[in-house]
Length: 362
Ligand SMILES: Cc1cc2nc3c(=O)[nH]c(=O)nc-3n(C[C@H](O)[C@H](O)[C@H](O)COP(=O)(O)O)c2cc1C
Image (cartoon, rainbow, N blue to C red; front, side):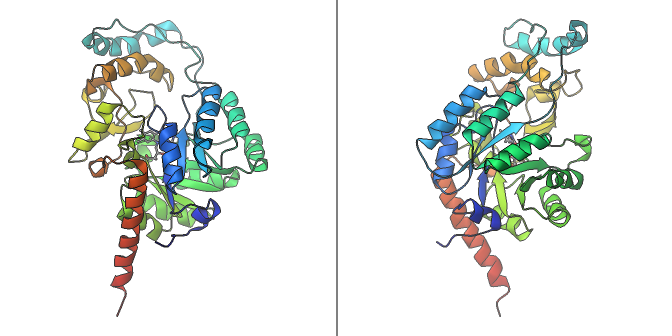
């Protein structure tokens, strides 16, 4: 099969214009990243919750298995400082009933740091020198942009609107990811109210292709080769797929998360802020519904507050309190090893492009 080349895929020498999305919290395991990259896509680590030493260890693990390029991704949102106990009371009381359902005591007040130190993580990125580094939930400081470029790292960032894409371009990023409203996981919005930044992948990709000169990658609701062909037709230089890779054998997602995706027959996702403090799309469950109006802490303090609840629920095989991030096309998920998924996506992409080309023949 001929390679399908875009500027983006040619620069990284990918077999096809496909990125396995970074997925913090487990799914983008070293096994998944290595398998996706070895198969000709760009495998990506979601390192938001990883300490620098662990980032370096996982990157070395992948490098020992494949010489192909891979990406690293971090959350660059600011963390809140100390939140007085009195200001945490309402949020603690709100989750206490859920903890009780699992036979657990109410959580203690949380204290910083709520996530690994971003500067130390950024130092680790420079040490690892991945082929690609992307940021989510914000932009990268100018001196870090300069340092990454000097190290030969290709830089990208998530945008959910035109203004964000233009700011990323002005900051010197090499490409921008158009994260449509269909996308699973955290909304990447960082310049406005995320509730007002729900433009779908089709419209957003076109808006960004027109608004910036750097390559645009399309993300959100893309699960098969036809979806990748559609993204290319819209002017995207690659498609970034998250949910499609969660059900891969190598993904580190919880078993019940994979099972729920494979059982999905309809889009049952919804957006919630109650797991982490920032809006994210996942399969609707009891926690999301019952907590819809509940008080919460700021991101990522709320993530710390719900940590034990999420892990205890997953360990008990109970999906009620687990964050099962997923995009709107989740019912198209398939349980395959990553290499087979990438091979099928490639076959489907060629078939979709050929059937569209056939429409314009005499
Ligand atoms: C489980 C999960 C975790 C995610 N974690 C991250 C992350 O750490 N960093 C990031 O930039 N995007 C993250 N995303 C969003 C993806 O980059 C991408 O926008 C999304 O998966 C595209 O939509 P799709 O899931 O329908 O393919 C995550 C998505 C999912 C499903």
